[in-house]
Length: 142
Image (cartoon, rainbow, N blue to C red; front, side, top):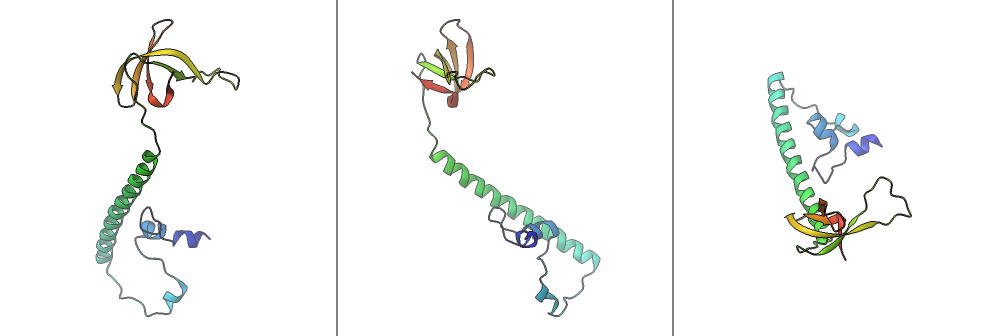
């Protein structure tokens, strides 16, 4: 089972784990029946190995980045992008350590004071005027 896994090409890298580890294709039982390959000198083998490792590392990195970008696009396509305006009343997710299943999930009300960036707002507690930066994933409009 391990041999099968290590000799199966992975989509994320484009190579088998065996090729990435040993910089060559794995040998199978029927490969020993074929005539032996031409022996290489140590220096030639080292150069060939180094070129192969550089090529596989670059190709695996590019393939991995391509797959990461594709996964990000899939994730972002289903992710809402809520917009809150300054002065809007909101509630925030309760992240208290003392929270249990009977605690309310959101606390508030708070008022948006300013937008720091696309995903972060500074909110102000309406009771004690304390300001806190909060990300949009923890904000809900009232």
